Length: 467
Image: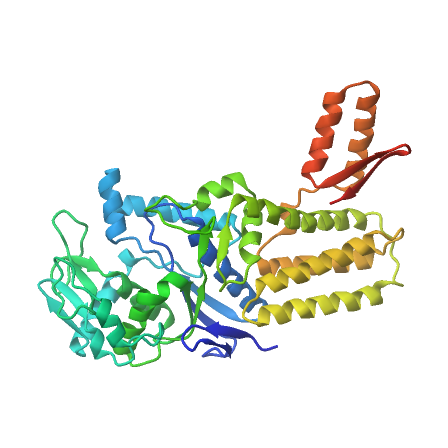
């Protein structure tokens, strides 16, 4: 089936046709590693990991490059504040990033290039731009001549004149035009630096991704991805310098994820309105956080609050509950074949719908709705007194297949109580009540409530159902 994705460059959905059949070259802008990532940084990690997983599911070989910006102004400022050197801080937070996103189910990238390991490529890239007349040196700094690139603004759909009205030359900058941007920055006294034809310094932010993408994926790539906040100026500048240098289209498809707000307020470290993924993972199952992120289409904004996360947990637990019950029921089901064809048709239809939703711009929100349809069908089947082991296996197999695309391992995360365990706890609760051990009885009731088990005490005994 055909995959369509929304291309920020053209502002429309397009059929995905990679440069080389069966292979995808994908570059994702990674973090600046001066601190732990916040939940907004975690969203692109989860979203584009899911895109990668789905492309691989469809048989593509994906070269997935995610860079680390391990030197820039933020890292230099952090080094001064912490009394450490830049490489030590970068190494610590690269490790932290990998741990956090791994907990969220993100696969290791094909390669994690670092700015500090790409200096020769960056310098060569800048030399080419100067030689071709697209860049100039000014007292140790090097700037890109924005007006020299005729297509500047094509990603953000802004004209050069509109951009010009809001541009300013900051104190200390030596650029000839307010729209020009830095490719190389002259080192200040005591700062980390590298030698170059223009003196000691370090790269500007935008040039690093262009150089690393060229080095590891070539002049033209299939997909360039990142957060919506990077579309301008970062990705716009990447296009300008890459296409000026290489005389080739830089990326055929640009995909951007939407923002995350905190209680409807824009996240900002300067105002303290942010939540570190590192801390959130300590408080909630990381699989739930991933589920929450994927419950909204990647291009739409997400409003985050712990209340909303708790609400998402109710739905997530429904999936875990039915998966656990399927695994348990398999042990007691018989090797019958009569009902398999009927249910297999339903399962095939659900799978086809899931794939159709993912083919439509990786719509994980609608894909998860299909998973809940699968939950409904499984619960319905489990009400039958006699179940077929082959049908149970068909259900669990489809759960596993869909969850592998979404990056959520229900086998690993499932902590829901099985039916027999619930019955055992109810018997224990009844015994506790008989001996007037009401504290233990209440403890069991609360334990079941946490698992979304609803109790109903009747004259005939206690009945239960899943909420």
